[in-house]
Image (cartoon, rainbow, N blue to C red; front, top):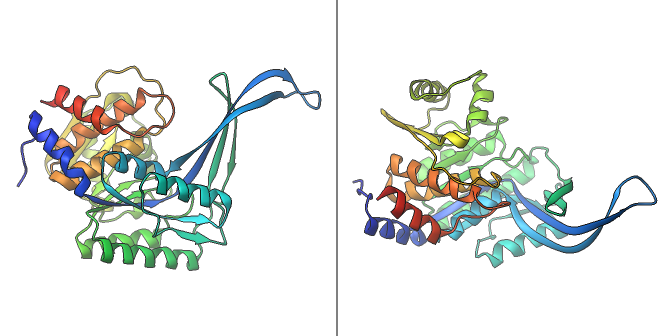
Length: 336
């Protein structure tokens, strides 16, 4: 039963159903630290600018940003990941909790540090980024602990959907991916994937596969100048031979999104906007697509709304999560 949602009351109804959805976000969570300051002089010690710090802000990054987007749409969100046993891990946990995201399934590991990215910014310009991370795959011990937590999460919470958000930092190992997709299939939990190149073909049997065009080109070794629907449908068929997934949702940057499920396919052009910053748009697209699909099972509606959401967050500077009110307004405006 697919509701026809292309009029106003139904968008309100759809958005009203998000708080009843339970979403698990599995992947590489990070702490983003922003430091702002002024540069008035060059250091006497070396030919580098001296940044005198004025303020410092901590934000949730990586897969955590997907969780944040789901939460800002009203869903009940749990984060499934591994952090280090360190102050960054504690800070990240506090940030999740203050945003009402469940951290009880997080694993704290002595073998890893929490991925953190520190950006030093002066006059709206990034001077430097400092990264602290371990990108090795999880140890067998940590993987087992995380898998047990995911089992507990599925059996005790009975989620609607689990989103795999891969940032190539080592949490999503091939065996973890296979185990979790199997668990989800058994429990009737929808799986959605935002892949990176390394594990691109490990996500067999997922429901929604959402790469961007660059990742598809790398994964399939394609050189493309022009993109059109027949070509994208061939790409879907090629991906499906390897992945046996159900739905492709391929983001085409400024050209919009392509979706295909069975014989139903299409390109949805992006709505013209003032693009300020594309960071975090992929996180928003997978979050919105997952919730809309879990609520409606309507693939073209999923693609339409995710396309609008991706454009909306590109208007803002920096990584921001989607505003539920703004997205609802835009859906009523553009899709009614």
